[in-house]
Image (cartoon, rainbow, N blue to C red; front, side):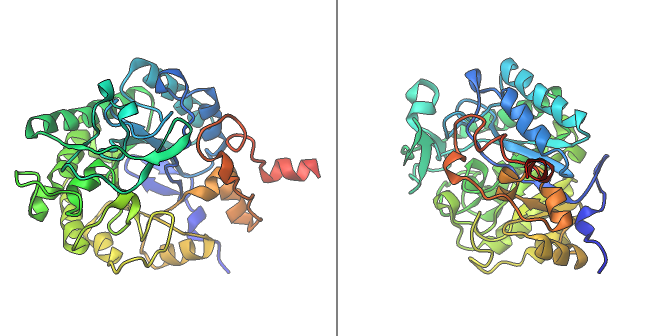
Length: 365
Protein backbone atom coordinates (compact mmCIF):
# COMPACT_ATOMS: atom_id res chain seq x y z
CA UNK A 1 0.00 0.00 0.00
CA UNK A 2 1.41 3.40 -0.98
CA UNK A 3 1.99 6.01 1.75
CA UNK A 4 -0.86 8.42 2.43
CA UNK A 5 -0.88 11.74 0.58
CA UNK A 6 -1.39 13.24 4.05
CA UNK A 7 2.38 13.21 4.55
CA UNK A 8 3.30 14.84 1.23
CA UNK A 9 4.44 18.48 1.13
CA UNK A 10 1.90 21.00 -0.15
CA UNK A 11 1.94 24.60 -1.36
CA UNK A 12 -0.18 27.16 0.44
CA UNK A 13 0.10 30.44 -1.42
CA UNK A 14 3.74 31.55 -1.17
CA UNK A 15 4.73 28.97 1.46
CA UNK A 16 5.43 25.25 1.34
CA UNK A 17 4.00 23.06 4.07
CA UNK A 18 5.95 19.97 5.17
CA UNK A 19 2.77 17.84 5.04
CA UNK A 20 -0.99 18.13 4.58
CA UNK A 21 -1.80 17.88 8.30
CA UNK A 22 -3.31 21.02 9.84
CA UNK A 23 -3.70 21.65 13.55
CA UNK A 24 -7.16 23.20 13.91
CA UNK A 25 -7.77 26.19 16.20
CA UNK A 26 -8.38 25.00 19.77
CA UNK A 27 -9.47 27.31 22.58
CA UNK A 28 -7.45 26.59 25.75
CA UNK A 29 -8.11 29.68 27.95
CA UNK A 30 -4.55 30.12 29.15
CA UNK A 31 -3.73 33.72 28.29
CA UNK A 32 -1.59 35.59 30.83
CA UNK A 33 -1.89 39.18 32.10
CA UNK A 34 -3.24 41.55 29.47
CA UNK A 35 -4.83 38.59 27.63
CA UNK A 36 -1.49 37.89 25.97
CA UNK A 37 0.02 34.56 24.96
CA UNK A 38 2.61 33.52 27.56
CA UNK A 39 5.70 31.28 27.63
CA UNK A 40 3.64 28.10 28.07
CA UNK A 41 1.72 28.94 24.91
CA UNK A 42 4.96 29.29 22.96
CA UNK A 43 6.05 25.88 24.25
CA UNK A 44 2.66 24.34 23.39
CA UNK A 45 2.69 25.42 19.74
CA UNK A 46 6.39 24.67 19.26
CA UNK A 47 5.75 21.10 20.48
CA UNK A 48 3.22 20.71 17.64
CA UNK A 49 5.26 22.40 14.91
CA UNK A 50 5.62 19.17 12.90
CA UNK A 51 2.10 19.81 11.52
CA UNK A 52 2.21 21.24 8.01
CA UNK A 53 0.23 24.22 9.31
CA UNK A 54 -0.72 25.30 12.82
CA UNK A 55 -3.77 27.52 13.18
CA UNK A 56 -3.73 29.27 16.54
CA UNK A 57 -6.57 29.34 19.00
CA UNK A 58 -9.15 32.00 18.21
CA UNK A 59 -7.91 35.44 19.24
CA UNK A 60 -10.26 38.37 19.69
CA UNK A 61 -9.77 41.43 17.48
CA UNK A 62 -10.99 43.79 20.24
CA UNK A 63 -12.20 43.70 23.84
CA UNK A 64 -15.76 43.67 22.50
CA UNK A 65 -14.87 40.55 20.50
CA UNK A 66 -14.04 38.48 23.63
CA UNK A 67 -16.50 35.83 24.77
CA UNK A 68 -14.65 33.56 27.20
CA UNK A 69 -12.24 34.13 30.07
CA UNK A 70 -8.48 34.11 29.45
CA UNK A 71 -8.56 33.96 25.66
CA UNK A 72 -5.73 35.86 23.96
CA UNK A 73 -6.23 39.01 21.93
CA UNK A 74 -4.36 40.52 18.99
CA UNK A 75 -5.19 44.21 19.48
CA UNK A 76 -2.59 45.49 21.99
CA UNK A 77 1.19 45.90 21.90
CA UNK A 78 1.59 43.39 24.75
CA UNK A 79 -0.49 40.85 22.84
CA UNK A 80 1.58 41.35 19.67
CA UNK A 81 4.76 40.85 21.72
CA UNK A 82 3.37 37.69 23.35
CA UNK A 83 2.41 36.20 19.99
CA UNK A 84 5.83 37.10 18.55
CA UNK A 85 7.43 34.69 21.05
CA UNK A 86 5.03 31.98 19.86
CA UNK A 87 5.73 32.50 16.16
CA UNK A 88 9.50 32.65 16.80
CA UNK A 89 9.33 29.33 18.70
CA UNK A 90 7.30 27.66 15.91
CA UNK A 91 9.54 28.98 13.15
CA UNK A 92 12.65 27.83 15.05
CA UNK A 93 11.22 24.29 14.74
CA UNK A 94 10.59 24.75 11.00
CA UNK A 95 6.82 25.13 11.44
CA UNK A 96 4.25 27.42 9.85
CA UNK A 97 1.51 29.21 11.80
CA UNK A 98 -1.59 31.29 11.01
CA UNK A 99 -3.64 33.08 13.68
CA UNK A 100 -7.42 32.82 13.85
CA UNK A 101 -9.09 36.25 14.12
CA UNK A 102 -12.26 36.26 16.21
CA UNK A 103 -15.23 38.34 17.18
CA UNK A 104 -17.71 36.28 19.21
CA UNK A 105 -20.68 38.62 18.79
CA UNK A 106 -23.52 37.45 21.06
CA UNK A 107 -21.57 34.52 22.56
CA UNK A 108 -20.25 36.60 25.44
CA UNK A 109 -20.96 37.83 28.93
CA UNK A 110 -21.33 41.34 30.32
CA UNK A 111 -18.40 40.70 32.71
CA UNK A 112 -16.05 40.58 29.68
CA UNK A 113 -17.47 43.52 27.74
CA UNK A 114 -16.26 47.14 27.79
CA UNK A 115 -17.91 48.93 30.75
CA UNK A 116 -20.03 45.82 31.45
CA UNK A 117 -22.16 46.50 28.37
CA UNK A 118 -24.29 44.01 26.47
CA UNK A 119 -22.57 41.82 23.85
CA UNK A 120 -23.30 42.80 20.24
CA UNK A 121 -25.10 40.83 17.55
CA UNK A 122 -26.86 41.33 14.22
CA UNK A 123 -30.18 41.25 16.12
CA UNK A 124 -31.12 41.38 19.80
CA UNK A 125 -31.74 37.63 20.08
CA UNK A 126 -30.06 35.75 22.93
CA UNK A 127 -28.36 32.46 22.07
CA UNK A 128 -29.39 29.43 24.07
CA UNK A 129 -25.85 28.46 24.99
CA UNK A 130 -23.17 28.95 27.63
CA UNK A 131 -19.79 30.63 27.86
CA UNK A 132 -16.82 30.08 30.20
CA UNK A 133 -16.30 32.88 32.74
CA UNK A 134 -15.12 32.88 36.34
CA UNK A 135 -13.92 29.30 35.96
CA UNK A 136 -17.38 27.95 35.16
CA UNK A 137 -19.83 27.60 32.29
CA UNK A 138 -22.63 30.13 32.51
CA UNK A 139 -25.45 31.39 30.26
CA UNK A 140 -24.41 34.02 27.72
CA UNK A 141 -25.75 37.54 28.28
CA UNK A 142 -28.55 38.98 26.16
CA UNK A 143 -27.09 40.97 23.24
CA UNK A 144 -28.01 44.25 21.62
CA UNK A 145 -28.22 44.75 17.85
CA UNK A 146 -25.28 46.55 16.28
CA UNK A 147 -26.11 49.98 14.87
CA UNK A 148 -25.39 50.36 11.17
CA UNK A 149 -22.88 53.09 12.07
CA UNK A 150 -20.89 50.60 14.22
CA UNK A 151 -20.30 48.02 11.49
CA UNK A 152 -17.36 49.79 9.78
CA UNK A 153 -15.60 49.67 13.17
CA UNK A 154 -15.97 45.87 13.27
CA UNK A 155 -14.41 45.59 9.80
CA UNK A 156 -11.61 47.98 10.83
CA UNK A 157 -10.88 45.89 13.95
CA UNK A 158 -10.39 42.74 11.84
CA UNK A 159 -8.19 44.66 9.40
CA UNK A 160 -5.98 46.07 12.16
CA UNK A 161 -5.77 42.67 13.88
CA UNK A 162 -4.49 41.17 10.61
CA UNK A 163 -1.78 43.85 10.39
CA UNK A 164 -0.91 43.18 14.05
CA UNK A 165 -0.65 39.45 13.27
CA UNK A 166 1.88 40.11 10.52
CA UNK A 167 3.84 42.31 12.95
CA UNK A 168 3.74 39.39 15.41
CA UNK A 169 5.36 37.12 12.82
CA UNK A 170 2.41 34.97 11.72
CA UNK A 171 2.59 33.44 8.24
CA UNK A 172 -1.04 34.44 7.68
CA UNK A 173 -4.47 34.75 9.27
CA UNK A 174 -7.69 32.77 9.36
CA UNK A 175 -10.88 34.81 9.69
CA UNK A 176 -13.32 33.04 12.01
CA UNK A 177 -16.55 32.93 10.02
CA UNK A 178 -17.86 29.77 11.70
CA UNK A 179 -19.42 28.19 14.80
CA UNK A 180 -22.11 30.75 15.52
CA UNK A 181 -19.78 33.70 16.17
CA UNK A 182 -20.35 37.21 14.82
CA UNK A 183 -19.72 36.77 11.08
CA UNK A 184 -21.69 33.51 11.08
CA UNK A 185 -24.48 35.21 13.07
CA UNK A 186 -24.81 37.85 10.36
CA UNK A 187 -24.78 35.25 7.57
CA UNK A 188 -27.45 32.93 9.00
CA UNK A 189 -31.12 33.84 9.17
CA UNK A 190 -31.67 32.15 12.54
CA UNK A 191 -29.70 34.97 14.20
CA UNK A 192 -30.03 37.80 11.68
CA UNK A 193 -33.45 39.50 11.49
CA UNK A 194 -32.15 42.88 10.27
CA UNK A 195 -33.99 44.88 7.62
CA UNK A 196 -31.09 47.13 6.53
CA UNK A 197 -28.26 46.41 4.06
CA UNK A 198 -26.86 43.71 6.39
CA UNK A 199 -30.10 41.72 6.68
CA UNK A 200 -32.75 40.03 4.58
CA UNK A 201 -31.53 38.21 1.47
CA UNK A 202 -28.37 36.15 1.09
CA UNK A 203 -26.24 38.97 -0.36
CA UNK A 204 -27.04 41.29 2.54
CA UNK A 205 -26.53 38.66 5.25
CA UNK A 206 -23.19 37.61 3.72
CA UNK A 207 -22.03 41.21 3.42
CA UNK A 208 -20.21 41.55 6.76
CA UNK A 209 -18.22 38.33 6.31
CA UNK A 210 -17.24 39.43 2.80
CA UNK A 211 -16.47 43.01 3.89
CA UNK A 212 -14.08 41.59 6.49
CA UNK A 213 -12.48 39.15 4.03
CA UNK A 214 -11.93 41.97 1.52
CA UNK A 215 -10.47 44.37 4.11
CA UNK A 216 -8.11 41.76 5.58
CA UNK A 217 -6.92 40.45 2.21
CA UNK A 218 -6.28 44.00 0.96
CA UNK A 219 -4.32 44.79 4.14
CA UNK A 220 -2.00 41.76 4.25
CA UNK A 221 -2.49 39.99 0.90
CA UNK A 222 -5.07 37.44 -0.21
CA UNK A 223 -2.29 34.82 -0.33
CA UNK A 224 -1.99 35.14 3.47
CA UNK A 225 -5.73 35.21 4.20
CA UNK A 226 -7.90 32.16 4.88
CA UNK A 227 -11.38 31.81 6.38
CA UNK A 228 -13.22 29.19 8.41
CA UNK A 229 -16.81 28.26 7.54
CA UNK A 230 -19.33 25.88 9.14
CA UNK A 231 -22.39 25.67 6.87
CA UNK A 232 -24.62 23.40 8.98
CA UNK A 233 -23.19 23.23 12.50
CA UNK A 234 -25.70 24.00 15.26
CA UNK A 235 -22.87 25.21 17.54
CA UNK A 236 -23.78 28.18 19.73
CA UNK A 237 -27.47 27.97 18.80
CA UNK A 238 -26.92 28.99 15.17
CA UNK A 239 -29.06 27.93 12.22
CA UNK A 240 -29.99 28.83 8.68
CA UNK A 241 -33.15 27.84 6.83
CA UNK A 242 -31.32 27.16 3.54
CA UNK A 243 -27.53 26.92 3.95
CA UNK A 244 -26.59 25.54 0.50
CA UNK A 245 -27.33 28.63 -1.61
CA UNK A 246 -25.99 30.86 1.17
CA UNK A 247 -22.60 29.16 1.29
CA UNK A 248 -22.40 28.61 -2.46
CA UNK A 249 -22.76 32.40 -2.79
CA UNK A 250 -20.26 33.14 0.00
CA UNK A 251 -17.65 30.80 -1.49
CA UNK A 252 -18.13 32.28 -4.98
CA UNK A 253 -17.35 35.71 -3.53
CA UNK A 254 -14.38 34.43 -1.49
CA UNK A 255 -13.03 32.78 -4.63
CA UNK A 256 -13.27 36.13 -6.46
CA UNK A 257 -11.15 37.66 -3.67
CA UNK A 258 -8.49 34.93 -4.27
CA UNK A 259 -8.24 33.96 -0.61
CA UNK A 260 -5.57 31.32 0.00
CA UNK A 261 -7.94 28.83 1.65
CA UNK A 262 -11.35 27.97 2.97
CA UNK A 263 -11.39 25.80 6.10
CA UNK A 264 -14.70 23.95 6.17
CA UNK A 265 -16.25 22.20 9.17
CA UNK A 266 -18.16 19.34 7.58
CA UNK A 267 -21.17 18.64 9.82
CA UNK A 268 -21.63 19.58 13.48
CA UNK A 269 -18.53 21.05 15.09
CA UNK A 270 -16.93 18.27 17.12
CA UNK A 271 -19.93 16.03 16.39
CA UNK A 272 -21.71 14.12 13.64
CA UNK A 273 -20.56 14.65 10.07
CA UNK A 274 -24.05 13.91 8.71
CA UNK A 275 -26.00 16.28 10.99
CA UNK A 276 -27.74 17.90 7.97
CA UNK A 277 -27.65 17.41 4.20
CA UNK A 278 -25.06 19.61 2.52
CA UNK A 279 -22.96 19.31 -0.64
CA UNK A 280 -19.40 20.19 0.39
CA UNK A 281 -18.26 19.17 -3.10
CA UNK A 282 -20.08 22.25 -4.39
CA UNK A 283 -17.86 24.50 -2.25
CA UNK A 284 -14.78 22.56 -3.34
CA UNK A 285 -15.65 23.11 -7.04
CA UNK A 286 -16.40 26.81 -6.59
CA UNK A 287 -13.19 27.63 -4.73
CA UNK A 288 -9.93 27.54 -6.69
CA UNK A 289 -7.62 27.95 -3.70
CA UNK A 290 -6.83 25.40 -1.00
CA UNK A 291 -9.68 23.47 0.63
CA UNK A 292 -9.04 22.42 4.24
CA UNK A 293 -11.46 19.72 5.42
CA UNK A 294 -12.29 19.43 9.11
CA UNK A 295 -14.39 17.32 11.48
CA UNK A 296 -14.00 13.74 12.63
CA UNK A 297 -11.06 12.89 10.40
CA UNK A 298 -8.77 9.94 11.03
CA UNK A 299 -5.95 8.61 8.82
CA UNK A 300 -8.27 6.44 6.72
CA UNK A 301 -10.83 9.17 5.98
CA UNK A 302 -8.10 11.76 5.39
CA UNK A 303 -6.36 9.49 2.88
CA UNK A 304 -9.65 8.67 1.13
CA UNK A 305 -10.63 12.34 0.74
CA UNK A 306 -7.17 13.40 -0.44
CA UNK A 307 -7.05 10.54 -2.97
CA UNK A 308 -10.49 11.55 -4.26
CA UNK A 309 -9.41 15.19 -4.63
CA UNK A 310 -12.15 16.21 -2.18
CA UNK A 311 -9.67 18.21 -0.06
CA UNK A 312 -6.11 19.56 -0.17
CA UNK A 313 -5.33 19.65 3.56
CA UNK A 314 -6.93 17.90 6.54
CA UNK A 315 -7.42 19.58 9.91
CA UNK A 316 -7.28 17.64 13.17
CA UNK A 317 -8.53 19.20 16.40
CA UNK A 318 -8.63 17.45 19.75
CA UNK A 319 -6.17 14.67 18.77
CA UNK A 320 -3.53 17.44 18.63
CA UNK A 321 -4.20 18.48 22.24
CA UNK A 322 -3.11 15.11 23.65
CA UNK A 323 -0.56 14.27 20.94
CA UNK A 324 2.08 16.91 20.26
CA UNK A 325 3.65 14.50 17.74
CA UNK A 326 0.34 13.62 16.05
CA UNK A 327 1.94 13.62 12.58
CA UNK A 328 4.46 10.96 13.62
CA UNK A 329 1.77 8.89 15.35
CA UNK A 330 -0.46 8.97 12.26
CA UNK A 331 2.48 8.12 9.99
CA UNK A 332 3.54 5.12 12.08
CA UNK A 333 -0.04 4.15 13.04
CA UNK A 334 0.99 4.40 16.70
CA UNK A 335 -1.68 4.59 19.44
CA UNK A 336 -2.79 8.04 20.53
CA UNK A 337 -2.59 9.48 24.03
CA UNK A 338 -5.93 9.83 25.78
CA UNK A 339 -7.35 13.33 26.12
CA UNK A 340 -7.73 14.70 29.67
CA UNK A 341 -11.01 16.63 29.33
CA UNK A 342 -10.73 18.13 32.82
CA UNK A 343 -7.75 20.26 31.70
CA UNK A 344 -9.13 21.50 28.37
CA UNK A 345 -10.08 24.99 29.53
CA UNK A 346 -7.82 27.06 31.76
CA UNK A 347 -5.02 26.01 34.09
CA UNK A 348 -1.30 25.62 33.55
CA UNK A 349 1.07 23.02 32.09
CA UNK A 350 -1.03 20.02 33.15
CA UNK A 351 -3.00 18.80 30.15
CA UNK A 352 -1.32 21.48 28.02
CA UNK A 353 2.42 20.97 27.57
CA UNK A 354 2.93 17.72 29.51
CA UNK A 355 1.50 15.14 27.09
CA UNK A 356 4.30 12.71 26.18
CA UNK A 357 5.62 12.18 22.66
CA UNK A 358 6.19 8.62 21.40
CA UNK A 359 9.90 9.11 21.91
CA UNK A 360 9.46 10.26 25.51
CA UNK A 361 7.02 7.43 26.27
CA UNK A 362 9.43 4.82 24.86
CA UNK A 363 12.35 6.30 26.81
CA UNK A 364 10.32 6.03 30.02
CA UNK A 365 9.55 2.34 29.49
